[in-house]
Length: 243
Image (cartoon, rainbow, N blue to C red; front, side):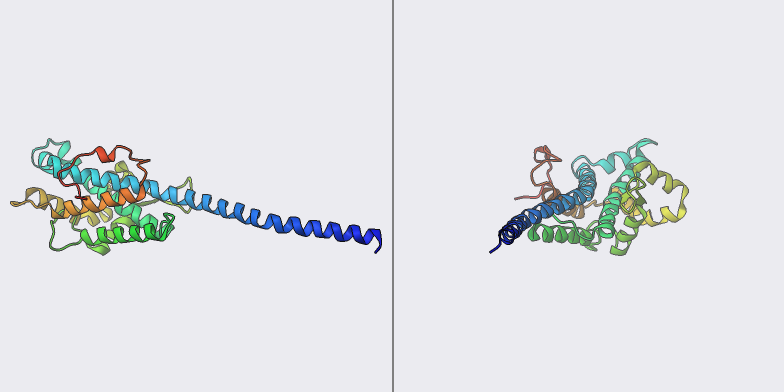
């Protein structure tokens, strides 16, 4: 066999071997890049959703443990009375807004395993049903369709990241309540429910206790390593879900 043929065969074999060896490496690199990209995307939605869950649960705990609504809606001054109404409405609306953003932009959060993904969908579904449970308290009693509508109204375009939704803040929420009747009308039922709960002769708490438990489960699921809320297990509540 001619020397040039031998050299060509050796060169071709070497190139083929290198390509075979590099295929798994390239595949692993591309897989890792996709995982990083997915984690980054999920983080952009998971973290604000987690904060919204935390804000809502914190308000529920102040209502249950410290009689927040009774202190400020019944006995509050001219500043705290409207603030207590509006901020309580806001934390619920903010949660519904981020759930709607998630539904529109992502569909489903990928938490890294089928079990955790299924648990997330299950908890969100339970909370949706609790918010319109006819046999529980009137506070936060919001029909399913109204939950979606409130969530839609809370979404604002994020100019820094086109195509990615975000929720309006508390200042804009209050501004729109004051100046946009078409916006404010969607929150009349929520406001009425808060008032009915606060001034009711026999104030219940079953809905809030259930929401507190389910929101706590959501926080544990989304922050299992206590990275974002490291001190949450030191919180004390008479209504903490029993293990």
